[in-house]
Image (tube, rainbow, N blue to C red):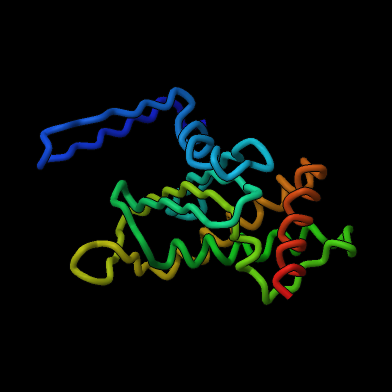
Amino acid sequence: MFPRVTYRLRDAVLQREERYRFEQGLGDYCARLSAPALPLHAPWCFEGHRGTTRVRLVLQWCQEPGSRLVSWVNLHRAHAGTHLEGLLDGLRLAPHDATESRPHLRIPLYIPSELLNGLTVLFEVSIPQPIWDGSLKGDLANEECEFDVAELVQAWLRQRFEAEPVVTERILEHALGRYITRG
């Protein structure tokens, strides 16, 4: 999904440029970012829209701790904002839906950090009229985006968890194990 993505990195000081091309798009890029962290499954890709909000999402849970998150809004790199709050809401709620039939893997709602630990996420949002906080366009402020993204992510992950029960068990067991280890 999202084929043929090319990134060009240019160092103006050293007058050097490198190009990275991913034939399979964001899925390849996600796999590359996740490789050192020992992925638990192949990258999951999703594209959808709700209202005027379009979302492209690729994610992959890994064994090693740490989160890798890259997000864009209308092709601008965004480090915070309502789109990320919506993503976190969807990521936090979907696994609880998946544990309805798996009470031995029930994950308390108050430990979303364990569900994010070891997760690689590439996330793009397109909206017609972005509202930015701050002068650097780094924080999206559109409130409707938060709700649209949360619903899309939760619904998509719920379907994915149902379609791949073995992977779901692996992800949930890993998060639960880290929670128990942490005490």
